[in-house]
Image 1 (cartoon, one colour):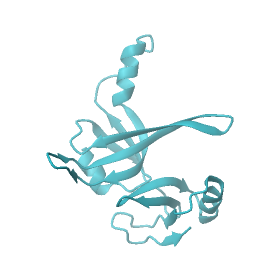
Image 2 (image 1 turned 180 degrees about the horizontal axis):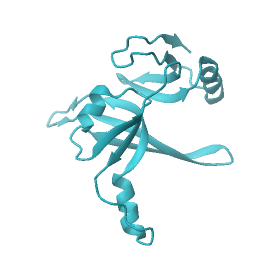
Image 3 (image 1 turned 180 degrees about the vertical axis):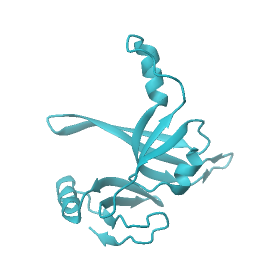
Image 4 (image 1 turned 90 degrees about the vertical axis):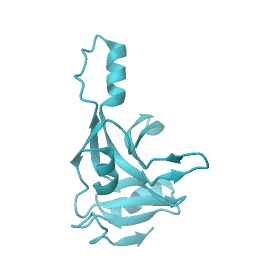
Length: 157
């Protein structure tokens, strides 16, 4: 599916696989493998952004995938996020959607909503908020019908 389909249909928290269609090179070709990994991977959908007009051009709609964290002794040192625009030539696939009953921890800023964490329950989301210290975060239950917001209940943190 295209990047536009992900922007239009995939819910926040979905696992998205992306690929350029090329075969994975052997591990001995480290530079080719690193280049291949930049165009082929998996990430959790954490943000969708509409087109943004500027005086001389309009930036296309985009979405951001959280691909992972590098940590040491339980402290996250680097977070890997990758943004893709609606005109991306990569092929995308939703490989897993959030399950009914899970809780999204969301933060609203600048007119956009970003997924901070996907918890298995409200209690787990509350514990995560207490540990991480986000004061303006809100919770959203994943419902049976997730595409248009039906079946979701928003809970203030």
